[in-house]
Image: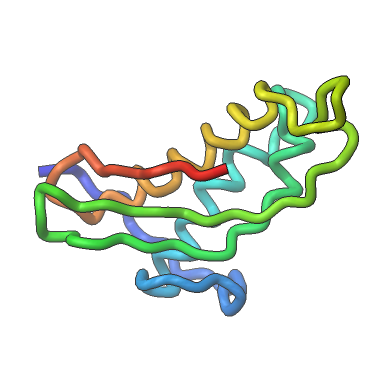
Length: 121
């Protein structure tokens, strides 16, 4: 059994976030994500991470060992995120995968810690 983090009850607006999890779980997901991107002067990529907008959080099969989840973020690709060819730099793409993939794992309402979190860029 996985230890579960308490879901803080705050007044963070999650009305713009779609998905099948509760508003409390959406707020928790935002707080977890903010932990990764709120260190602008202390960590790599935080200035890019702060531009990501969470638009959906879903978890399917919470009571199943084959549970899966997804977090959906949107961002406008800007020049500082591009390589010399004007396309999204691979390191920037990899950076963005790290915090948003971790968010779904932290919503560990599941009995098993192995949550399948597919990534689509």
